[in-house]
Image 1 (cartoon, one colour):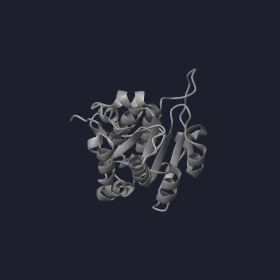
Image 2 (spheres, helix red, strand yellow):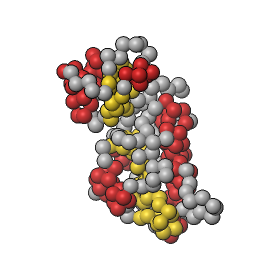
Image 3 (cartoon, helix red, strand yellow):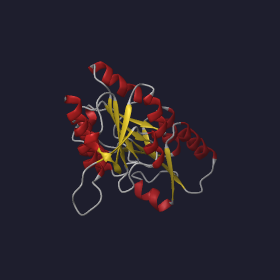
Image 4 (cartoon, rainbow, N blue to C red):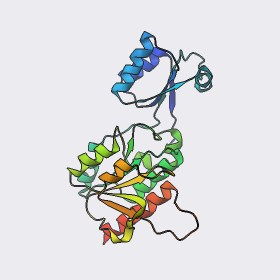
Length: 246
């Protein structure tokens, strides 16, 4: 299947897309533009927690394919987002304890696609990503997932820490990967679980880490101090799979 992200250009087209609920990853707006139509676009975008990036005219001209962007371009997602309840329903329909990936600001689309692929192969019921400061479902993500986006729902939320709190009420326990945690083999990772993977280089943010029940480290014997985010996700996920099969 071929995936293509769409760039929507012009004030009327972007306003209509926002009001129609089209999945939009990011808005590019000419820096300093404050007139009425642009203010309306910004207001609609904030209602939906869509990231707004203010750029210069040269950047907008680079993104534009029509040459008539009128100071506004929206990047539409290559794939439709689910919501968290759909992910939980996915587990219920299968009669399984929920197993969910939560990604704390993964910005590399290749990493995001690879993690979604791993989530599908290890039987996770869905992936949750933040709306801001993170990669969305672009064409690159879709291609890297190798088709997993057709089967594994991805939800976008405003606040990962708050989402963890809400899912705890549903009975989930949370484990995050962190090099300062206890060895992952020593944790009981059975039952309803959410696995949290942090940003490349930075790891899981402090607030999100504090919401987790378990801090799990992955054993490493080499000369460098961290794994690629998608590799770390795969290693910890398959320890969860091993325990769920036991």
